[in-house]
Amino acid sequence: MLRIGYVRLRDERSADDTATLKAIGCHVVRAEEPAGPMTDESTVLSSILDFIGEGDQLVVTRLEHLAGSSRNVLQVIDKLEERQASLYIVEPEICSEGEGGRALRAALQAVLSVEPLGMHRRPRGRSAIDDIRALQAAGVGPVEIARRLGVSRMTVWRKLREVESRADA
Image (cartoon, rainbow, N blue to C red):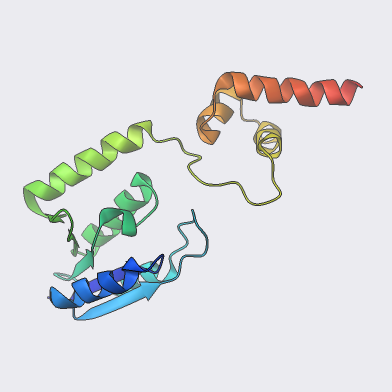
């Protein structure tokens, strides 16, 4: 069994995480510099998931170091299961196999059911109204826009009225 450690370089704790992963027996520790504060572009993680084999284990010190959302963590777990590999989390000690794995999946799915789809930061220079207008132009209704952006329906309606009043003026 190959144990592959994965670290996202975010702060001064990253060195401690790397040392922890080596101390618990990871054969390889791969580090990744995230593209942005709230992005999940993970080329190193993707290459690990493409490489990892049957019986191998991906190891992270904490679950939030793996991905930025429940949806992305579940995608990683699914990919590992497809490859017949597992996920091991150091703090708290959880493995994606067995009872702990079933509990982890259930908890992530429960969180996912209430997690808004738009849990990402808007690119610099873009306003909420730009996002709302883009979704509306794509044929998405106000209620769905609110759900995707994680805002209230009233906010969407107000912003749309704002745009209409500017157009009429």
